[in-house]
Image (cartoon, rainbow, N blue to C red; front, side):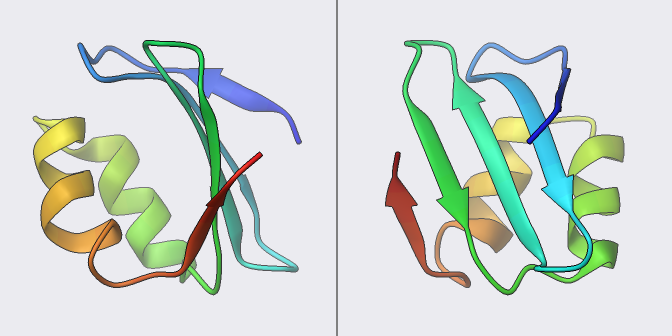
Length: 69
């Protein structure tokens, strides 16, 4: 999955596959996580958030299943 670099102290890059609704995040420490069944609107809001880490912890982490890859 192709990821786009983002300006965040927590997240380095974010990718999204609209067909599978899978979002992939590369964190600043180099770890990679996939989040599943993420609506396109959540991905868009994350990309537009003033605080990517804050949005991630408030809406994505508690709301969607994930796994480290």
